[in-house]
Length: 478
RNA sequence: CGGGGUGUAGCGCAGUUGGUAGCGCGCUUGGUUUGGGACCAAGAUGCCGGGGGUUCAAGUCCUCUCACCCCGACCA
Image (cartoon, rainbow, N blue to C red; front, side, top):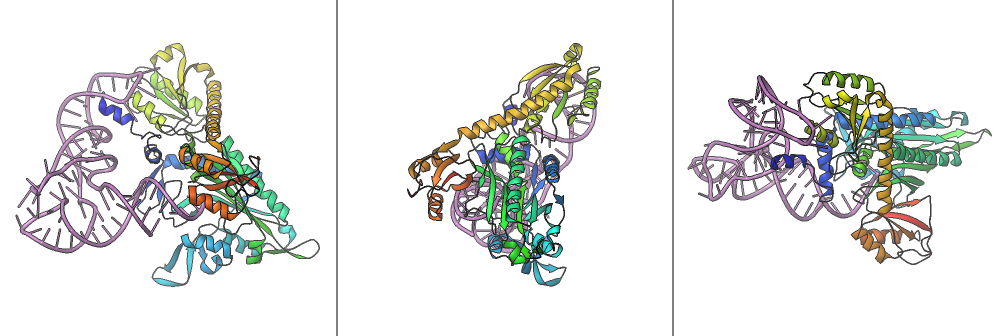
């Protein structure tokens, strides 16, 4: 029995060692495997299915807001990358270079895209001539490469999957509207689909994207109290347009520069789902994103009629839900643990006793609460239960985030909170880079964002005591 | 890139003063089982991370190297 117990507890407790818990989950739930190149991961079918659902949901929203998908090359000539100064300085340290084609040394080395601003800019310069050509609302799904020093599956890998939207507009106002529109799309997606509450706001200059005029972000809080930047939306103004010569002729026959935006989310969102909803029994997936919403587990399936009934239910429910039937000869207890580990939102048990009573047992993953449901009203009850789980996950995550959101008015208070009770800390800031640097130096916490919903906690900067300009969410970040 | 740790069967690990490799889980086959990780029986599985040394003999000692994990600095 001791041995069995150990097996069940194969996942490290999150309170004991959060990092190890995370690693255990992604391996045991079959999300990823390590690849032979350092820092690269294999996204396994179950993990990739989550990404496919993310793609499906986001693509719908992108199309609804008028965007078209395109595909850009993965190589960027060095000369092209060098065109925008701040941008290069931001990315140069972490790009991978291709220097040879076969045995031939290339005359100009090519970087493997770390992001595709330069490619989109080059293309826009070619295809935009008139105000009639605007706006251009493009998006691409691809992978990018950043030669990171340390890596963690989903959170930071050398190569990762993402989408990057790149748009060009006639006016600064339109570009700003687009930047905020897409930030809101991300926020809505995170909250409604991933059940992850987010704080919307603007990045400080120190934290903004290399080459951007302004960066907006959605920030979420993980179970361990560390913050995760979950999506960003940048307004480039006309900086890139000037560097790349993207001009159009307006209605008055005047030559103008376009105003651009870019925005992206990555497979990191999967890391967020794990760290926001997961527990000591494994993954917990929000029904809207779960590859499998219902696992049907026949009990005593060698007995007459059980398997037949289970198959009948599977066929019936598969019309409306993402369902699997596990008719392998594993023990029921093993299957319970397995599907909990994989975060399947609801499981259905059906055995001889249930068939007699024309019922099934539904068990929700998040609370393990069991309900007996008549087979006749299964579709309705299951739909209700999935909705209830979706909502409960959001509520629970929000409650935890709110609980772990603190207020500090002095640097001493701030330091104490950061050290003793990790989470978001709301505090006032004068807007000076020196104070931001000092906070990081002292506490290793950074400014996550200046939220749109500002509060006046005090009229002085917590660091220097000068008049406060912004209320900032601070925290240690992934 | 700094600090720490680990590489032995698919996974988790043991391997004493150097003597030619073992345990648990998993896997295969057969049987009994099935409402919270079943049991019995019979099997299969190793370039001991890699290179170089020392030695009659290296998983074990020396040396170089590679990879991964954790903590920092940098980033999505």
